[in-house]
Length: 377
Image: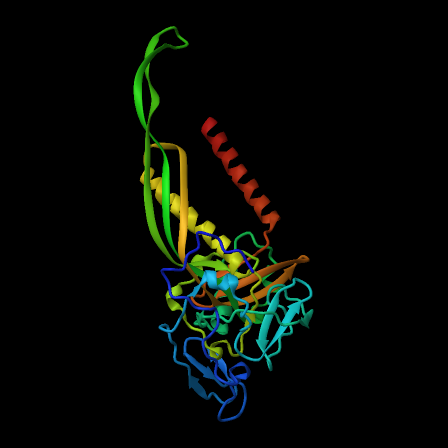
């Protein structure tokens, strides 16, 4: 039994266990064979359908935003029924080089780790998992992701000359990464001293023995306090170890999770559970609250600021967000590449050419020296 924090109240929300109320028979073994040729269908970005890569047959999957549920966080803390997984027969694999854990369709193959490029992929044991509640389907296809990355690579300044020959843009793997969202009603009590600047005219004797006047700044302090209430909807936090900017995704694109949407793609297994994820989300929420309360305290400067926040009606859900992931090795170091599967934003690690940077510094120094010499002539 896990101790439930006293401030976590679920009176304001309907209580749901983080499992589906009913699961159709055979749903866990659901496959997607093509009705024309029997090959496995795959989700096609931007088309909202499963498509056969061999004969081109397509089957629509209706996207449903209205059935997305939020689950009461307190119920999760005391629940023992969490073994839901992806809702399909899947294989769990682990990279022996970087430790990344992934899940893929039973018939799907993964020969290279999308995070480090290693082929040290081994089967691993299944664990209790919470089934995703919502997902943003891929809107950017693999060809588009490659093009966007090549454009990003071409614009790099101070990159080693051999970099472009070392990076292969054809190794992108479509990957759904695990995230958590939290909702919370908050009531915050804040207090502190707001300081207002004012100036007093003073006189002093300068180094030449002359008397001069100047303005001395002083502070007039005022004690203030108040209450701030807010509702936070879909506070996003990662379910994995590395840090990614959550603002890269537009959550209005979420739709109810459907096993067909992940057909043909890898799914990363979460390593940050909801309890740890809530600690991160709570810190983020309370940082935002503190900023709002400081605005209300006002003044030119502040001191003694304090804020105490109570949370209630906390709910959460597991979601999957799309990314085209790859990695390359340059000078014995691994660099990761990510292309956002929703909007195509490219974020990638990259090496720098210190020779080019040094030459630029020397060029700037030479220009400054020449300009000074010209002005002194």
